[in-house]
Amino acid sequence: MDDYQDCGTRPIDVRAIGVDFYVTGTLKYLLGPPRLAFLYVRKELQDTLIPTMTGWFAQRQPFAFDVKHLDRAPTARKFEGGSPPIPNIYAAKRSLALIEDVGRDAPSQLMSRRLRNIFCKVLPRWISPSKHRQPPLDLLW
Image 1: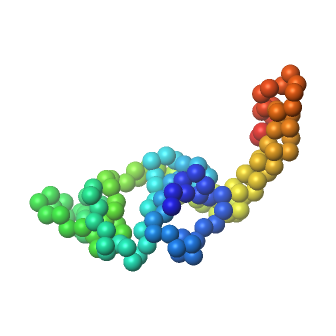
Image 2 (image 1 turned 30 degrees about the vertical axis):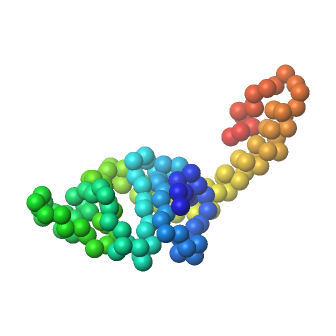
Image 3 (image 1 turned 90 degrees about the vertical axis):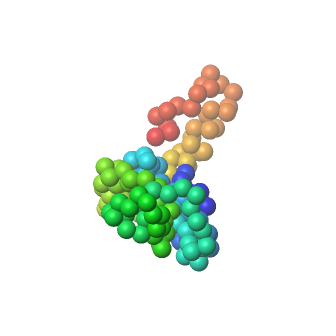
């Protein structure tokens, strides 16, 4: 399941909905930086899948720096690519802490208010025959 465009707008339980894979990132509603993504692989599938691409963090012992042997991690870590973007991780930690501070429902409540505003105020004015063809930006946000 690709949830990049919606993650952070509402709670999601990947086990309850029974997805095999779940992919998202921090850029949109998690309020984080780009280049940081998450992959969930259902535990029962992890042992059956062999990545076709790998990075040094996907090794069983990544800091052994053994370039002659491919020894994948026995966990979902075997799906990791290259070096993690450390500055982005620190920025994302702050973003997630902010969401925890204001409440996990805050992003979805904000989006609901904005969508209600668009549907109730902006669209009727925008689609009605008048001199205003562009939605007034002050009503959008």
